Amino acid sequence: MYNFDNLLDRRNTDCVKWDELEDVFGSSDLLPYWVADMDFEVLPEIREALVKRAEHATYGYTFATKDYYKNFIKWNKERNDFEINKDEIISVPGVVCATSFVIYAFTQKGDKVLLNTPIYNPFFDVINAHKREMVTSKLILNNERYEMDWEDFENKLKDNVKLFILCSPHNPVGRVWTREELEKIVKLCKENNVLIFSDEIHSDLIFPGHKHIPTLNVSKDAEDITISAMAPSKTFNIAGLKSSMILVKNKELKEKLAEAIEAFDLGVGLFGYKATEIAYGYGAKWTDELISYLYENAKFVVDFFEKNMPKVKAYVPDGTYLMWLDFSAYGLGQKEILEKLKYEARVALNDGEKYGKEEGLGFMRLNIGTTRETLKKGLERIKKSFQD
Image 1 (cartoon, rainbow, N blue to C red):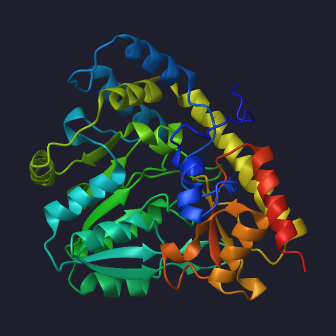
Image 2 (image 1 turned 45 degrees about the vertical axis):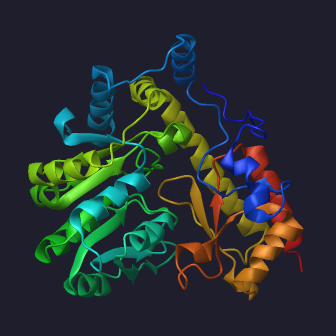
């Protein structure tokens, strides 16, 4: 059994979540439930392997070992029933970086890129940085479950869209898309000659009753038009080591993408490679226990709001350690909600408006990747600050 109730003191470790509170929120004494990393100790085997490697006092050029590929391939076969080959993998520092490469390689300035909002906000930044035109299709909230607006989605695809960015599982709303939904997405994109980039960074963190389907695993058509990205960073809390994978089965797409990436001479570092190799080789039991702990955290949050703050609408997501909270019943403006949380509750959550100007109004994103006691403490603070 692993202990996820042990809260590490992360302050003064150059940690964004805790040490950048002053810069981002204007105060260093808030409890942080914002940026998407967790407060848990990493898999012990990762730490041991990195310490052992660090003790060898030279850190020259490196490469991905056979076990790096073997472990990742085996992990996907066993957990996702997904077969991927070594020559279909491109190692890159991060998934946002991968998104940027795909936009650079397969679209031109002014081309349209489609997103489902609300959505992970760095996608906005990358699209704008490449001077592409962002097109959005809003997700529909139906009985505590976000769904695609299929009519709107199809109409947007028909309007000369070149690339669709799929967040699977979805950040921030926590949807794990079903096979039927993914099949429909692929069918519509294929019909409209639209390339799919599938961000699957949260794909290991799936709650009971749901199953992650890699987009590349949906059909032969999906293989033809999809580029995916996965990473150990969210699952194993190693985002600072900068290690991700782009997955491409279509050889022509892979050649074109690899050529674009080579122009920038970017890759994964020594410790990123090693941590990834160990994570996928030894992390199955740790991940299963983590999922159970996070699932209980999510249920705890929903139960807390139902009993103490019924005006806040919360639901258990299908996966991820992020929860999408609806404060709109209080009738406050977005700025008022933010200020109440920051100045009265003394907690740091992500502003929902960052994920969609209209779709995120009244919402906040809560990171539950922390100890239950820390989570409870933050919720109690929120309760007190919103008492009538």
